[in-house]
Length: 617
Image (cartoon, rainbow, N blue to C red; front, side, top):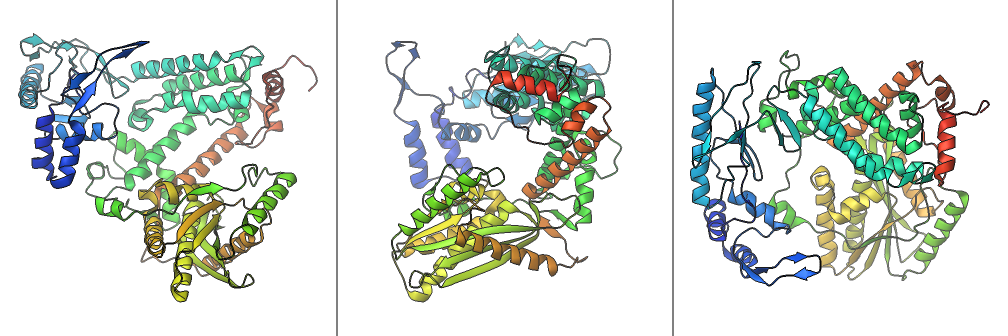
């Protein structure tokens, strides 16, 4: 298997060949082609080193590094690479050859290399023979030499190579990658460690957040792809690395119980995190259509062959059984084609009237009073002809092992008639038999726009300032900033359509975050209306064997997370070590109130984890 290396792949693209490829292979012409050609033309470049700046020189090659369009143009440039190049990711070219003997493999690989060299000449791209590597995969204990030539120069044979962040070994051993992964995580942790010195420096809460954000991603990078090779001892290495990092952050002793450490820090053990990632990846694969390459090679449920996909299916048996018991399945992901993108028309600016309202679960009475006062003041200061709509979404839980945010969903909207403030136009609708709160809130925004358009149409109104109040920041982000476009496409299409109609009336729409559960009258009315509709949906529900409910991958992820937390809780309940901690923190995922002072946090953590010199705590 050769791993090709190009000499400055992005920077040496011949722009004339690229433009020709775009025109002939992709059928792009007219103004768009002229725009791309203009983007690539008349470009200059210079080098800046410290305080020294070089002269400007014409830039005649390359796809313009650092631009959004650059990588897309490069992919278009190489899309007709030889058929033997597989897999292919940007400029990381590889080829695979198999045979009954090393001689057969060598001949086949040389043919692949020759085809790639000829293609590079046509594209005026240069292969870097000195950095190109070849690897021979075999179970034999004896080393086998493979002689591959590029332009008369022999390619170096190696037993290990880093490919897309994964350390490949000629024996397909996972050990080199585990060592590389743990080492990289510890090096990243050492940088965070510079912010801590004994009992001084970074507080524990911020340290844990930095670990989850900057260190743990190294341990779980591409884990679903290689987890099927992992042994129990290798999983223990990941667990030890995570524990080492957390003990450093929390100032704990080496002998501290690892299980208790995870509970106190709120960081899930790696064995459960690995299963969660595998299940999430499998449900993501199920979003693809049946003719997708990965769906076509997906093994049957009870296959005995151990492959990455069969392992993912095995790890996902809990979520698959749960979906079966709920009589639902993962919906096929909607494709966002160019025509759909052109339909996009988002509401205007979104902003929060109050930034000090806190979270609805941890909000103090003072914060609640202040938030209500600021919202009431904002509403009273609006012009009398403004249109106000309060919207909300609600979930009626289906029970069982489902999280509280998944179940029968509904949304509502309450519009205040500016001609009569006591008159309210209300609307509500069911969202699904098994959905999540964010989808309900997003559908609520779509319903609010629908109410606005209908109200203005009936009264032939124009040029109105419209305000939609929503208590879900995630839904506002989806509606205004195109976040998770394909995952909420149906709701977004409704939002786009009604936004266009309102803009055609010269009306603007602003989305306002409204803190929920702050006794804001109209928000409470919308909340109550959505809850009633959700309960009604639950009461009218009957299981149909003829059809299955469709759920999104996002909803499935929440179900997976809940089941993984339940497994972690069950394991914690059975633990013998850490019994003292269990008596203080019996529930996993509990939010421990850390102070903002590291010295206090360390003492507190040691007392919780029974790792202190104090005799009585």
